[in-house]
Image (tube, rainbow, N blue to C red; front, top):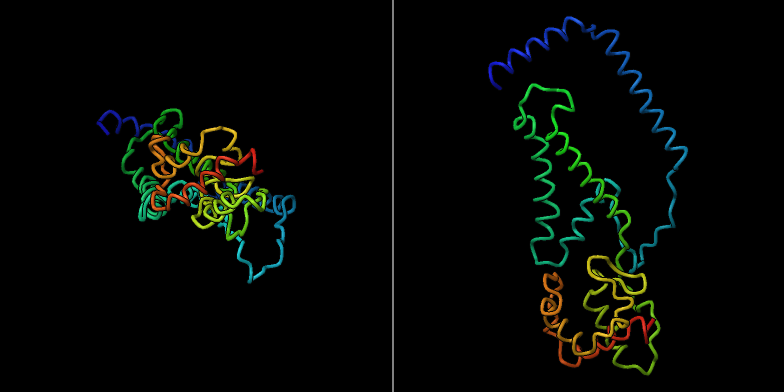
Length: 252
């Protein structure tokens, strides 16, 4: 802050102080009004959107997928974004680095922006930064709240595979065993990190394309974060590719 800014600030402060009003009863009255309105809104929302009691807890279930409370949904979505990239990044990026960057920005901003100006329209950078952070948290909360739940420990895909189609049935077992539904959706079940595979077979990519993609995802989809399944045996790759190539056509 230069000398001219200091002098202008002191003049504005002196004028505001001269025209100001005492804390009691004016500020107390305003606080009382705002607090009353806030409490009224909370009561109205509690009556309008009451908390629902869900189904009775089943401690023996193996298919329940836990979800966090709404105020942790943005972290839940971050974990979905960084899931399965490597051993450390999901935990570090989603639960430490990004949240702490936002927290640090909040704590350091008064020291970074030390201008005396208090009028909103005179502080565009601060306002844009605040809006961006709030938008990010709100958007991530929305995505976390509307994200499809994981597949849990389901035993069968929600599609019909003929009993005699041994290759596709083996491919189904591989999909469930390798956690493919953590990232992909098949017939409404699974995650949303990767592409929806419900109608994968309708794209007519071919068995060999599917095998090559499974062995080296980036060779067919540059920039893909999908892990390689090159460790599967040739027969397993063939079975998995057979299932993928039939999704939405033979198997639906």
